Amino acid sequence: MELYTDEYFMREALKEAVKAFDTGEVPVGAVVVSNNRIIARAHNQTEKLTDATAHAEMLAITAAANYLGSKYLSECTLYVTLEPCVMCAGALHWTQLEKLVFGASDIQRGYSIVSTPLLHPRTEVVKGIKAEESKKLINDFFKKIRN
Amino acid sequence: MELYTDEYFMREALKEAVKAFDTGEVPVGAVVVSNNRIIARAHNQTEKLTDATAHAEMLAITAAANYLGSKYLSECTLYVTLEPCVMCAGALHWTQLEKLVFGASDIQRGYSIVSTPLLHPRTEVVKGIKAEESKKLINDFFKKIRN
Image (cartoon, rainbow over all chains, first blue to last red; front, side, top):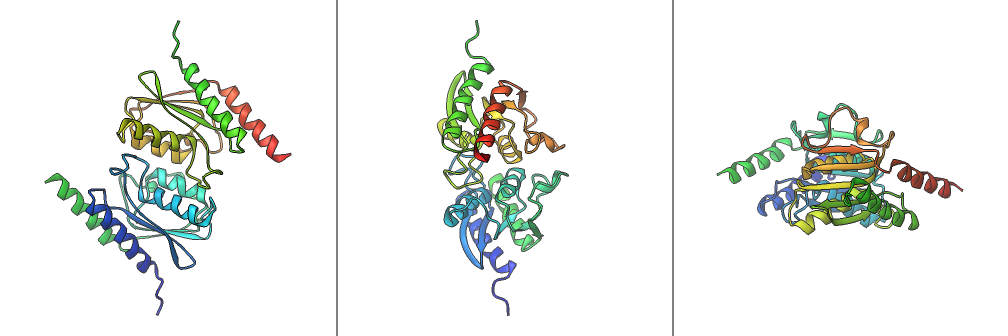
């Protein structure tokens, strides 16, 4: 039995997304994994930090790079509950990320709406891991704030 | 005589780029202007902060949002010496920036290599302001580190 599956780490990213939900932020969470260890955790904090750039992925990249003492995450996997936006995909390009795993697709704001490949050519992509849970959390959030 | 021209503020962005040059960073500088006042200044610090996301624009956006107490820079102009990359253009989209002024074009990494428009539709773009000085600084930097 494999403990450290993509599902396992995506559950950890979902825990981060729940933290965002509970503090009134669009619920997106991320973790960065190196050698089966979580080296960074983050959730969207654009409201708390009053900063449009404070997406879960951006905060996780900065924390992981700080932990590793390297700008490059070339031996890391980033798990994020929602498909990254163009900004985050551009940031992941600079890090030369080894692998990106995301949950739900974002057909309005996700990086794949852009036809030019935005990620680094070496980055492997896996999508749809725990997509239903990720999407439900976001739908619940928008239902809640619209009521 | 108009004091607060695009050239005036781009000179201030160039001063930031020189600070980057002097500290061994790829020399790109930015300032954010609101009502003819500079509310944020930043230069590329990817090496110093060991963070691939620490581009001049990203640091300037965060500083300006912090100053204004708002995620949105919808009444601001960002001056940057080099054409923003995809990450920075994506970030500027989220801020709903009013106006972007950049110096030199970046034919390899600039956001305009992507055919999909990445900036917010409301963002006015002016390019080529002090492009020669901006480009020379970058060329001098790469000549220096390659020797």
